[in-house]
Image (cartoon, rainbow, N blue to C red; front, side):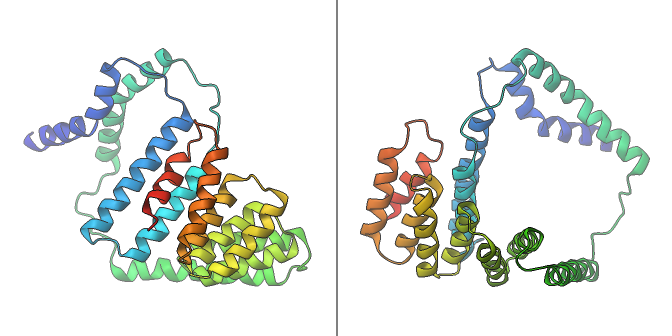
Length: 266
């Protein structure tokens, strides 16, 4: 009985923020605003990880760049949502249903003495992922390089390589896709990779080409400043970001990202 009381207390503690939210007077909050709050919290957490030594400078820089990319790519407008009363009722039901469902699932399927996945198992899964990537490479290689299917395959391959931290391989796949057909969003993805790899000149060339067709695209202008900053040209970066802020609407969700980068310049 003591164990179940303890588990119940832990579940109640975990759901405490949700209960507080339900009891607090409602405030309109769209999806875009919620996403932005989450991204800002992630940036703050990355800074804490860096200060505590759990992330080195390169890891912190790469992770921060990814969060900033998501802020810049976030939708500008919210889609229509259900009424707040309906949402609150659903959340209130979840306060009781989630722990009950979890307890029921545990009683039926729980294995409390199951050991953690050993290193050999994790190694096997990594080998399976490598095999899947190799299969993807082989299938893409058999396609007509000029076909749209081959281009999409290269983008998928680049995404997979990037998710595993293989930046050079990811950049190669993205570059092949861009050679087949150039477009701004993919050029921005490749530019980010080049900046992470320290290839600032290559990133600047990609951004300049993409800006030729989309000169006011915020993400491209942000990356242009980032490439200058990482190359040690702080004055150029400052001018680029100041111009971006001057053209940005006051409610632009990515304004704090640019302002933060400006403040970090020497």
